Image: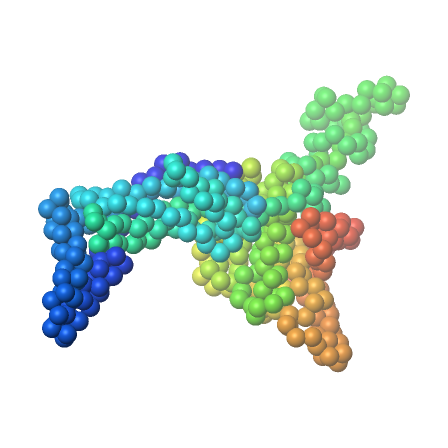
Length: 427
């Protein structure tokens, strides 16, 4: 859990209006006065006098003690909290009037998917998110004038909670590809600096002395050096399909896509690789590939469309700056939007290794159950689409979603890692 301390507060204007008590007193007083005038009975007017007197006395007392506050400052600490889903964070809220009098009471308002506890005496409360997302913390302030005949209500959002999705700790293997010349942790078949034995050859001028194999040299009478397999690093870019889809299985695929992207990028960063993310569709954005633990939280912020580190995209294709040369592209999509498929084909044409994870699977994106013929036509269409993408060198993985452990995605990538390396050429 990460907190951003410090709170400047939000200033909101108070619009005073008659309170419920004032309206009731005025109604009782006016009703008795009107009834007394109609019935010409002074006793009814005498009955209404205390109600009217209470309204006028309270208004005079409020005016005589000082003018009412026109603004109120609402504060919440911390202003920004970063947690993982199903975690809880403690926040503190307060409000005070500016240049006037008012009796204030604050109440936190829960957004959809957010659970708030009761407000304590010191103004603190606990908040927890049941699902990942970007949640605003709204604070409602109820102001009352002295005497209770005037009140005002304002609602502002002085704090936010970024709830990150839980990424399974499974190590997701990479698809077979040629890695760039950068030292990393992936064992390759190329000779260079490393620890894995590869071969022994004769000594050449310029070979380092620590590479000399003294046993072979003594046995053969000539200088020999030991060659080793080198380790290389990879660049991973996860692409999420955020295009709007019809409610049902297709729209629920965004849940799998976000969790899959979090698992892929976390696994890459733990191996020492660079990782980035691109969201194509609604409010398209991208974050460049970088190293480190901080990059993981920046990726999650970009997925939630929070923070200022990501860049917006104008168009439907992934920008050239967002994808490093030789990066491995892993897309997550229900394969229902043509623009997303065209973006993946364009990345393959640039020479990248592209793997597309089908988050919808064999489940039709319809709420109503299909008949046998329609279901068969749907499956044929999906296989035809996968075959067309495969002809340009895009591997299609069907992610059988069982739970949030991510085991299905890990097994799917282990199967694809056994395939031969595709040539990295432009198509």
